[in-house]
Length: 140
Image (cartoon, rainbow, N blue to C red; front, side, top):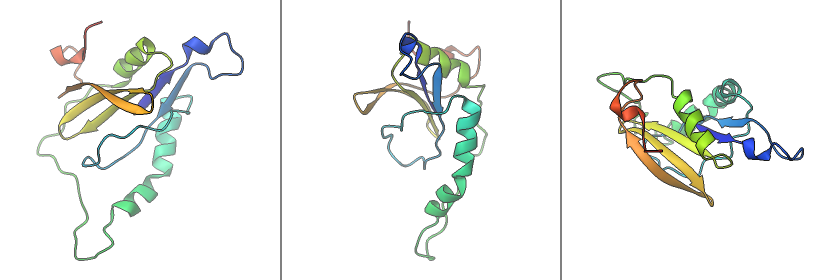
């Protein structure tokens, strides 16, 4: 999930305004690459686009050799997760003009700042539960 706050563009009518969102589903084993620029005006439209492409992602996950099993994610206990949008929006506002990505995998939640076509890891935390000490990933 990636957000980019465009508040610094308010005086320029030729540039994007508001926030841009992108949601992608990737295999947890894949390394974090540079996410594509978030171009959807709302998180809802970004999720809808992600779901529209889900059939392609599922087809890519099926091994070409039928002797290999289809990878299926499993977890003995569901991850505790509150709504990640307030945190991502807050960090996106702090780093206006730069894409900020939040990646979920079995190891936890990873926050990245995209700078100069690279994804720079900011922090990792195991939950996004409101009120937990991990909810604030770095000092302001």
